[in-house]
Length: 286
Image (cartoon, rainbow, N blue to C red; front, side, top):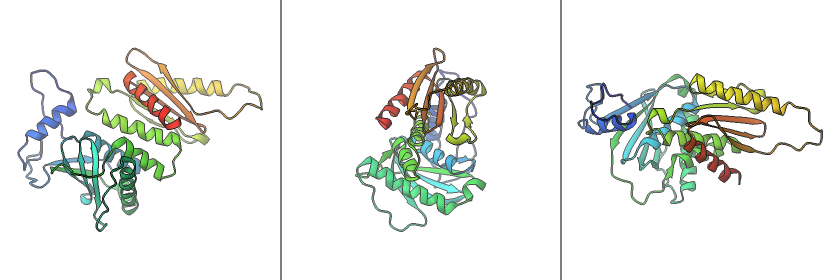
């Protein structure tokens, strides 16, 4: 989203909310902060093209941040690649440039998510290396509210995307966590500070994101868990079962530690977000 040049002297509003209000107040043909006439596409956001994971995360975030009905044109390298119809933080339509008449999504959210996921994965395959080398942009314009259209939330779409690629349950849980983070994007930044450290099975390179201070805390937990796992054990010890723990790390922070099939996921989160993810874990793992 475009960043406002300054805030009013009144009570501070959450950043994304203030940005949305400024965008809605713009004339129909104005692009916020640019002065450029874009009569058909009043709002444009640009994201860095850094690969498939970033592409999916950008789409999920766009869905989670859109409340009023919008027709969102997704462009790769400045060229239109797909059109999404989004309202009330739900995806209700997705068509690709290369496709003919797209079948209507089923009313069941899970089935709708599976259809939309297949479209996005097809787009990724068609784009090939372009997602790495070129920027992803979104152009938005108001549209009529979808009527009698199957739709799904970003969380359901994320689960369908990971399931379609043959991921493990822990990967699906990570996708749900990413969707939850996107859905909380309107929360004030100080309340949504978080960090993630993912250690794949087999000793592959860990993946980390977030402030250095929080990552240091997560790494300390990782080392403690690794030390515990390295203790001598009986040869008859059963294979460790999937596990999810919530560890206190202060009044405004909890650490979620989830393990499955030798992989470890650590997240530093506000308490309410950590509890929501723990509930998602219970639903996913039964």
